[in-house]
Length: 352
Image 1 (tube, rainbow, N blue to C red):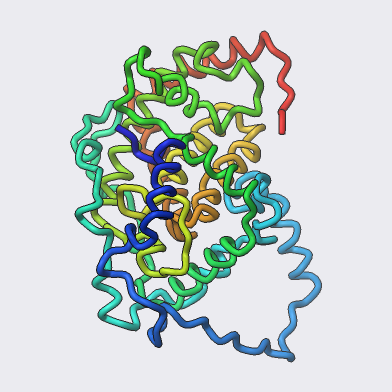
Image 2 (spheres, rainbow, N blue to C red):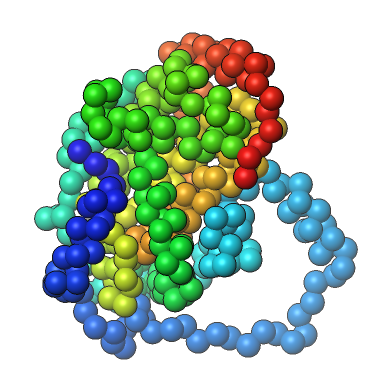
């Protein structure tokens, strides 16, 4: 069972799209019309009299530099040509998120396309808190100004992305851990376990499941718990994918589950925050890797920026809950000891 599409599945899906380009569309699809979701927002002219004192600019600059290592919303290091120069979600989220068209609010992820049931029935290892413990704000309304801006942003990414960018997203699409792939003889097992170490890959070849078996086991348990919770949130919100609202989007895959929050963003940021607790001096690199994974899903046309942001917010709360668990803290101590021991035997030079 796969949470996301494998390269073979993506290739098959693309071939089906060539044969029948309307196959992915549901009755919810519609052609661009006069509703706000399909109209570009009119940009208001800037106030020519507005200014910011130089001292405030300097303070803002110093603050941004000081918080760089804590930000997961920096410019992408893997998608430099298409990545915005600044925090695109901060700009987009300033728009109105309330509904404007009741009909568009009826569009959700098609129930017939759901492949999520098993993940909602998984047993957790460390956490025993209700899904409601994670305070993820509702996604912007389908017909809202913010969603329109998000869709326009995805269209811009689509226009800019190159074949190389698309190939890179293919690679990142399979960086995920499926809690049900546990048999070492399964052909997908090596990829599955290695995905747990992607966010910390720059630390060197020693940061691997082979060198860190205790860490591998703990991370598998962590992501099993995280997967249960973020899939439960997906089921509750049941948000339509971007291509369900915007038919001009040429998405590179069609995941079999709802959009909000992003699973790639959730899992990668769980890794980033957890590893940052263990190796705080490399926090910036971990968060950059998590950002790239999340952003790749936007480049791929399968997630809104707000999906990525919700995944980050979930991950931060999830790791905070983990640190309250006595069972996890016992395993965390063992993982920390293993990492420190193995790290001490290797020179630690970050690779780009």
